[in-house]
Amino acid sequence: MYASLLFAFGALGASALPNLAVWNGTSPSNCSSSSSSSVNDTQILQFALTLENLENAFYMEGLSKFNDSAFQSAGFAPVIRERYLQIMQHERTHVAFLSAILGNWSTQPCNYTFPLNTVQDFVTTSFALESAGQAAYLGAGSLLQNKSLIPVTGSILSVEGRQASWISSAALNATPWNGPFDTPINASDIFSLASPFITTCPSTNPPLIVTPLNTLTLTPANATAGSNVTVQVGGPDFNSSSIPIISSATPAAAPALGGNFLAYFHGLGVSFSPIAQDNTTSVPTGLQGLVFASVVSTNSSVPSANTTLSGLAPLNIGVQPTADNSLN
Image 1 (cartoon, rainbow, N blue to C red):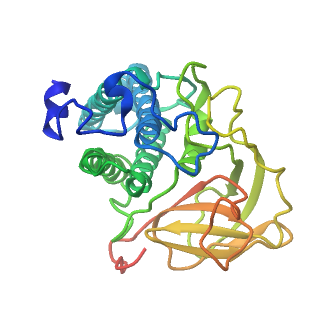
Image 2 (image 1 turned 90 degrees about the vertical axis):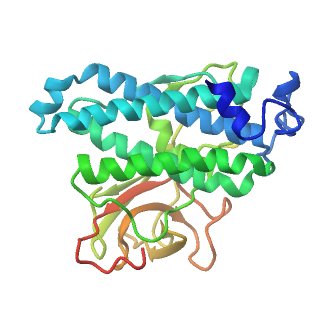
């Protein structure tokens, strides 16, 4: 089955995927690089597989824990769990597909912990994971060197987006989209959303193209545009001794927040709000849909690794049916 899918985008061969050296059993030439500034396609697909392994484990655990009766007791129609079973099948296929491409250089599943006390926890977390997956694929697209991989990752990207949209609208009775644009996010930022679910990864896994970032908490978590939030930055989002990574860099100690800024990544844009000395800030008006926030040191340039002071925190700002959704 997967061989036929692989054939559809260029066959199983080095000529189709020249920088995936796994095809002839040798290590990619720059996999041993100590810097994530120049990544290759193998590393990008390994990161994608890491996220797919997490999603696959999440759906297997959640749907094993919560049966039809549990969903219905929580107020969900039977079709909701039935659709979730299909999403689980999608994620299982993504794992098998990417593993078939990477071969011996595949990342193996990690050990996970998911906060699944209720069916509602499962539904809410599923939206967060699907949204993160979509943003990750979107962020990685421009880094791919082998353009034959763009329709491959794009095909998975669109499915992640469809699943996030369905969960938001059908399961959560919320907004089915963010606006005319979705948001591309880089690997380290996305991993700051995924790492809380990962306890350890096999030490034999290929090192990931991520670096630890300080955790970010916004209170209240369900803040809306125009409202005030309290910003809190903690320690690193993961320990590199538990998750193999290329770079040994660790984030600086949590900074004093006053005088810095909260950056809001929305669609293809970024907005800022100043953080006051009491660690509060006001969410800009006009933001709609899922917004990713991060603490940065300046509002005069697009955030970069040098100006980013924290990982991400999501803000899911609802879009009313009658709202002007021409911008997000």
